[in-house]
Length: 360
Image 1: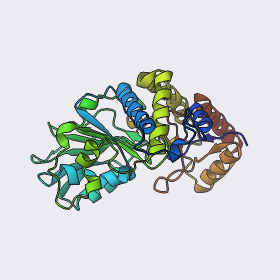
Image 2 (image 1 turned 180 degrees about the horizontal axis):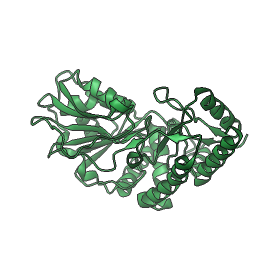
Image 3 (image 1 turned 45 degrees about the horizontal axis):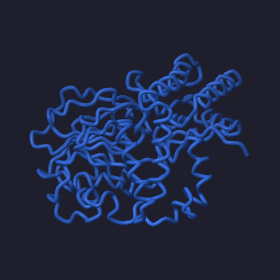
Image 4 (image 1 turned 180 degrees about the vertical axis):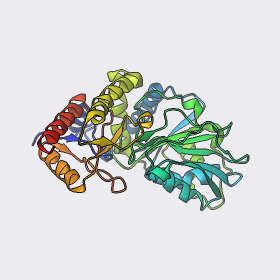
């Protein structure tokens, strides 16, 4: 069986070069005589792995010195609770709801204080990003929260909201490392790694140091305190060692490829191939307002459920897998993360053209 083109939204495609390296080191990591999977997280060998991973990520994102990088378990969804527990000093937070994950974060925050939905695009099935230039920011808000790229709906904030001086917290799970970012604009920028960086089971959270304190909501679990994790260098308990190791390999791959500027160039080139075809197709159409389109997740539909199902089935037979859209949108979705080669997108478009001709 040869490799397929995997358009899954996450867990998702990883760079082949990284997979091969990981396979070569599976039985014996650099002369240790064991796999990283078997290695003590307290060993010098593992300390070197986690230190290098952090440094490479700092280099890639140009992370300022007053930010901590935390490798945490529980995925992004656990941060939906950890963020209000750590940041809600005034028990008030403002949420911009542009998709299912922002909505879930907003609902979770309601358990810990007053969460205000200050903007939403739910009225049109999250197919656009609302204007966030002049929002009714609460005067006593502890932070303003966004999900920057909406995996399910295929939208992306092209400019950050005007938070009127309030701390911005952003979930970047599905656009992590896809383009350069100015980390200093965020109080917290975090994301699950299983979409664009590594295997499932971990979240990386980049947190400004002044937000890491002992002053957290009463009842906050020890493990969910940012300070617990930061003080221990992400090694308070046994972390997801193997995931950290694979992410570290991906960071090295990204550096070798030319960093985040080069990734942005490639991602724009790949997305353009697919969007240009969708814009002229008679059968398929994109579901997102053009200016808010994501470079990472591209939903599209035929408007006919049976035709959609036929397309997904035949695409799979042609080695183009995981194209079924999320149940809330229907149709199809192609996730074209960093590790998806341009050839994969070209193969998808070629197949779509053929399918359109046969089913016109």
